Length: 233
Length: 135
Length: 156
Ligand code: HEM
Ligand code: HEM
Ligand code: SF4
Ligand code: FES
Image 1 (cartoon, rainbow over the protein chains, first blue to last red):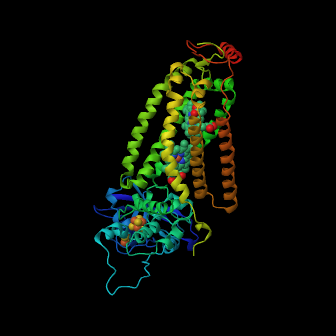
Image 2: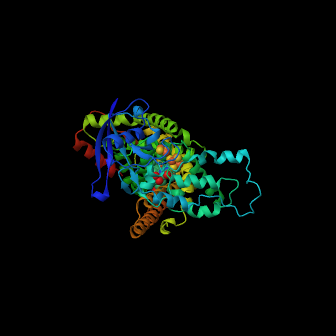
Image 3: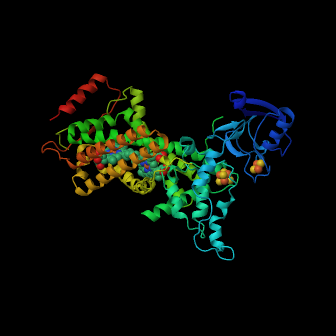
């Protein structure tokens, strides 16, 4: 079936203005938006630039805004998209480097700020640090994150305030704060319990709608909030 | 293309807009309640509120209050009772309950509004107070 | 690295207070609506008058409830304004002006509302009660209404 793609184009090196370019393409059943981009790049226009790697929804490289919603291009099948025209744009709220490629530096910055690693000052045991199944289940779903940035870049609070840590970093903070083996909660609270941390989240749910891993992000953020509040009051 | 507004974002925009509107209402309300210091002037004001236009505004106010309160409950449910996965359903339930409450308000308020429109007297009170009279 | 400025501590109180006061406000708001719209004082004659309010507010208990309603609603609402300021106003100077304005509004309206409640005086003797009459009938000419209104106001 032939579909029309309107793809966001921008090349700062050629003094280009951001604009949409239209491509028409035959998409067989099962064709993903990423497949379509491959075909456009291979057959119609070699200058089209985008990020991808695994093309199977696991590396988190191909996050983009498709028909107004952030998602993975490789996990979105063309035949399920409604409307005559399919709009493909880079993830919003970040500096655009070229076409569909954004500068992820601000994303990693937030990520680092919440110390995304196990903090445990006790002597390492000779084996692994064990954890009960129950404790593992608390953080299992939160560990599914593939760092695709679909959530943070979908968040209106983040658009309004670029210093906001954003859902991806907060989710990772949950993953460690609620890890029974971790002792770094207080350190992380210093970043979380701030004007640019947890309290910029207004339960808007754009993050959960966008997340390709279907993680219950908002709930984990709320659990962080309630834990901090119940420890203080 | 604008980012698509789904249930959660819609609820947020409504919550913020109604919350800020209620703050403005509260300022006006504190002013109007302050006229209790002068009974005649307070009664005059209340009579004015019984006019068609103000009944209509009151219905709007009811809608704003109900929207904010019910969505406030939804937010609390998300935060404390793990309703996060069901937030959209909770939103539609809130819309349903809210509609019923506003309909109930409409049954009480709209007749006066229609009277006012049909008589062309939007600001004339439908009640008057007779000071100093006896029951 | 991240600018330290954005990472001022704080914010948890507003979040906590919004939820706790929200809970209390639901109850207070329902009571408020019941009192000003559905109490027999009001429903018997159709209009909320000074006397109807005084019947309730001459008791210190109801005054206390009204005061806490005032304080909670004002604090809840203005903290919501603070939240919006934190979200949208990033320039330091502008933010300070906005936050200052909110504090001034909180004090002005908080004091004004409290004074209203605390200084309530019952009707002067001889001016009560206040019968209410429904203005009925077909459209009345504006002048006629005006005249009626005059009498009502001047009445005693
Ligand atoms: C009566 C029941 C009420 C409930 C259950 C309620 C609930 C809430 C909750 C949970 C929030 C937090 C939203 C967030 O953290 O994002 C909130 C915010 C807010 N509320 Fe209320 N509220 C109520 C009444 C009121 C009243 C009477 C006013 C106005 C005087 C008001 C004004 C606001 C404002 C301005 C905000 C900030 C909006 C925002 O952050 O998006 N609320 N409310
Ligand atoms: C049309 C609906 C309303 C009417 C007719 C009304 C009427 C009144 C009256 C007569 C009073 C005087 C004190 C009393 O009787 O207890 C009052 C006080 C008050 N009302 Fe309302 N009200 C309405 C809606 C609201 C709403 C929606 C809110 C919440 C934002 C609210 C908040 C308050 C507060 C905080 C006070 C205390 C004011 C003060 O101390 O100056 N009212 N209201
Ligand atoms: S939480 Fe979901 S949307 Fe956010 S970065 Fe991880 S996988 Fe992507
Ligand atoms: S290409 Fe790896 S997630 Fe889409």
